Length: 413
Ligand SMILES: [Zn+2]
Ligand SMILES: [Zn+2]
Image 1 (cartoon, rainbow, N blue to C red):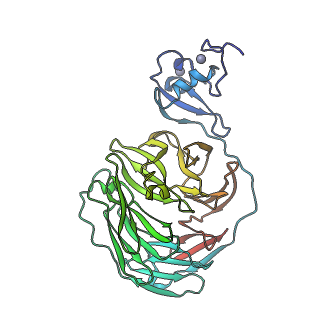
Image 2 (image 1 turned 180 degrees about the vertical axis):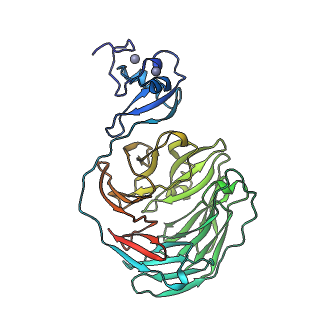
Image 3 (image 1 turned 135 degrees about the vertical axis):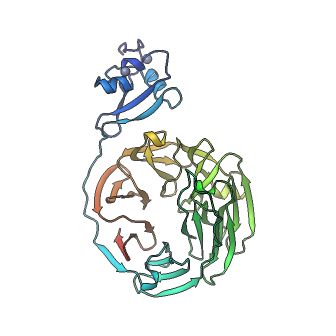
């Protein structure tokens, strides 16, 4: 081994440093200078970056690690462009366009209903009613009128985010919830009768800062619902009777969006602290219900100012999180894939942005310009569908769907 610029005889780090980042004082602002190959980068102080001096010192793994460990220095941003790997595959498509029935135009949300392989949808109409719609036959059936009470008037603050109602459907399609993201109230409904089985109240403390925490799972033959009951408390209830099964209060974390793995075993939760620091946590839902695990579980990633985003499960064991970096100010478009049970980051690649969906093998990213399809074993982009921005994955029907005006546009996978 060679003696490196830091004076140490040890394994060389991948990242090269500028000379100002060497030495005992590690309390620097630094920039990650991308090399144009995947997410490989070097480390530079801002003065060298401004002067155009490239970081060229080869140092040992320990010396580079102390600058870039998320504790000592402060990562202020990325410079340059990452490498995005392309491996063009067969063109997806075609897109199928279906006009929404007159009564469903301007719908506030729509969510897939598992019904064989039919393209059945639960639609939240513009006046808050719930309607079942079969996109294949065109049949509609009204389930319930608006179940939500008015939201208390909130002083619009600097952090106030739009209050938006959103649908959540249980895996069997027997019950659903409508709850307001960045609001206080929601309701769980039996879809066979339209009856409200449980009123959701997430509490009146900074509920404007997080999407409403609610998700369904199957447990021992019954449908349970996990939902926020205070800013820092999660409750599991029987979705048909509304009976509480258990409640855990944290005292530290605001609970935002919840995502249950396809097999119903684990929860991934987006949370924030007061500071405000966002974190994605995961825990075992089955063991929570028997008392041997529970929220918040293990942190997958922690980022300053970042907690209101989508994520998706990749199969039953992995979670894909958008954005590479430690803070909202230094976030680069990309995907980080974590093993939920261990927190290990198994794949990181630049490029994907927008809402994430997955069929277990591919990552579908709803970028503003259109869908991008990524291979999750290699991080390569295999296809794009310009202009098609899906908002939901209908797993049972095997399609992605989005709206274009008053049309539902679907792509078969
Ligand atoms: Zn420098
Ligand atoms: Zn060294």
